[in-house]
Each structure stands twice: as C-alpha cells, then as structure tokens.
Image (cartoon, helix red, strand yellow):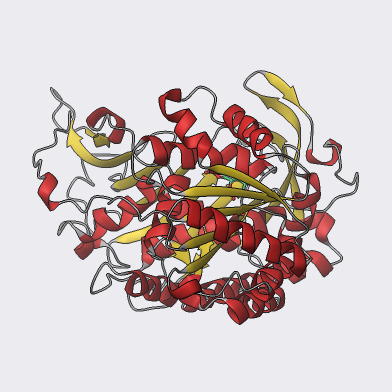
Length: 498
Ligand code: BG6
C-alpha cells in the first residue's frame, strides 16, 4: 500500500520558531562530541535561520588556541555542508582557554563573555554545554557557580541554563551527588539532561501514533497485547572508548537511559496536555511501576553477553577482550536482554523484552508490539496452523516506519491465510530533512522546553531499578557462567531462558 499524506494543514503544526539570540558556551570545545555532534548541529541551525546571527558560540577548553585556530577546527567539523554562511558563522565563534577547576579562570571567562555580549548587543541569555568527561562535571559546575556564571538576571537580564550529557552519575548515589552540585547553582528548570534518543523524530512519533489516533489506544493494553520487544542493536563495537565502556558496559551505556525512555514512551498513559512536566510525570510513573529485579529469582529475567571475534559486513572483527584498552579477562557485558514488567492496571502480566548490544548483525532500532492471537479460531478444522497474530512495528532505524501486519486469504485458494502489511515509511512521504536529534535538543534548550530532557526523579528511579543488577554483575562469583559469549556479527547469545 502506498501511503499518501491526506491532510496537509501546516497551520495545524507547531513549528519551531526562531530562537532569541544568546551565548552558547561549550566546555570541552576541543573534544570529540563538539566536533562530531555540536558544531555540525549549531551550523545547521544557523543555516536554517533558527539560530539568529547575533548569537555567539564560545568554545572553552584547556588547550591554548586562538579564535582563528578554533574557527579552523570547526570548519573541518562542518566540511561537506553548504558553506554559504560559513564566514558569518565563523565570526560568531570564539575560543577561551581555561582550567575548569579554577574559579579565577572562569571569572576571566565571565569578563570575556560580558564584553562579547556587549559588542553583539546580546541580553545575557546563556547556555553552558558540558561536552566534557563526566569525571569533570562536578568540579566544572562548581566553578561555573562560584564564578557567578550560573547567576540569572546578570546585569538586569538574561537566563543561564546548563546542559549535561549522560551518564548522570554511575549509580544512584553518584547521581544524587551530581544533582546536588547542579542544584546548588541551577534550579531544576535550568538543568537540561540530554538523551538524544528522546529527540529522534520517530521516537517522538510513538506518542503521536498512540495519542493522536483512536484506533490504537483501545488495544494498547494487556487484553490485546501479548508482549512487546524493544531493540537497539548496533553493529559497531566500542570504537576508541574502551576506558569508558569497561566502566559502564551495556547496562549503564544503553539501558539506564535510552532503553528506559523507549519503554516509557511505549507504556506511558496519555498526559492531559503536551507540556514538558505532564509528559515527564507520565514517563516517571512507568519507571516507578517497574517490577524490581531481585537476587531471589537469581536474575533469571536477564541475559548478559559479551562479543567474541566474528565477521561484520564480510570483514573480520576482534572480540571485546581483544579490543585495545580492554582487559583480557574483562567481565563487562556488551549485550543484554531483559524481561521487564510494568506493574499497573494496563500492563499487568505483559512482558517487555528490552535488548541492546554491540557488534550485532546490523544496526537496528525498533519497537515491536505483538498482539494476542485471536481468542477463537473458526478456521481450526480447515487449517493446520494457528492464526498468526498481528504485529505493529515502529521502526526507528534504519527505516523510519510504521508497519502493521494482518491476515488475508491468499487469492485463488479456498482458505489460506497469509500475513500482509500496511506500511508507512517516513522517507517515502517526507523529503524535507528534519532537525536531527542534537539540533532539536539545542533549540529546545535555547527555547527553554524541557520535554525531551531527563528530570532528576526519573534519573534516580532508573538507577534504583538497575542497581541490583549492576551490583550483582559486579560482585557475583559466577559471572563467568552468566556472561554468555556471542560471535560478533550474530544476533547475540542463544537465549532459551526468558
Ligand atoms: C550512546 C551510547 O548514548 O548511544 C553509544 O553511548 C551508542 O554506545 C549510541 O553507540 C547509540 O546511538 P544511536 O543514535 O547511534 O542509536
């Protein structure tokens, strides 16, 4: 079936407006995140005209560098894009070398910012983006606070917001500590905790599909849904992040954040309005309803794996323990499947299978709703096989799709049921390139919309949920039996326990 866009009503769309001019201060301006994600995102926003020309971007890092040298680095980071706006964009880029753990250094940054804002006639609205290693979060936030940079209404106007990337702590306790530091200097409405999964267009679409249609929601419960699979598979390995990954593993890297958010969007109740805190409240209710894992059931609802050598796209790849920087005896999981239950009226008894892993067959992100089989089959005497249940697949990557399978009779036969699909593919219908996740998040932050960001209560609830598993993995003596090896390029360890 070829879908057509039946209803073209741009006036009914909430379109991103142009942001107010502001200063974007990027700590960690020489790092990977800045060059790979932030610089291209900021330049794209500039190209699309949503980031006003008078805004400034101030890169902050330890290395000594001139503004022009910094501009050259950023130019390399945006190479390949439409360069028609480059000269103007470059003029808005500045660099400031500083020690993050030195309040005097940050006071100098404060002076420089004031001068630049005066030159550009800016009102003093500021975003501080921490693109630095998490080990530096606490000290940097503390210094931002001590130097007065976090203060709002500086010289009579202007807001100050802070953006941090996951991981938000490495367990419940450290998450609370980090939050204490953050809230000492910024109140919750000014803290933007990024999860780039939440900003993916098709992830957001889960809410639109569920709550802007009448046909799905009446079926969206334990009466009609048998189980749900949420998968975020990756074919890449750990790249050059051995140190980080050895410390985090798949549970901290993907489950404490992205997988939990995908689960929440699939399972949450409709909020009464599309407002940041209403939506975030509903997501939190799901985290609060998760059935805890316990040592008593020996964590049998969790499968952990680690990739061995294998082949991906015809190329031999090394196993996890042979990756540079990884211990040859590492017990870090690179794969996990969890059977999770949401203990509430809607979902009682429906298992949610969450799976994520590195070095799997291909990169694939999807949410698959498996409906129940028909309660009674009138075809049971005529057909050997049982009737195949309906499946609704929300594809997030590589194809952004909504696909519903249903049964029809094969033409020409008396009775022969076959599964066919109604298929909607974003790329076939929309050719316009949308804002990518980082562009959207940056814009939301500048516009003060926290809907796509983590709130601290959700962070704490997710750590509480995962902590028993993490501690068990880290302390149990039979981890060598628990951690199943899988060949890189396959779909993970053989699972017959869940
Ligand atoms: C990051 C993880 O948060 O998400 C990475 O740290 C992972 O390990 C990445 O590769 C996956 O994101 P995406 O958008 O490529 O699915």
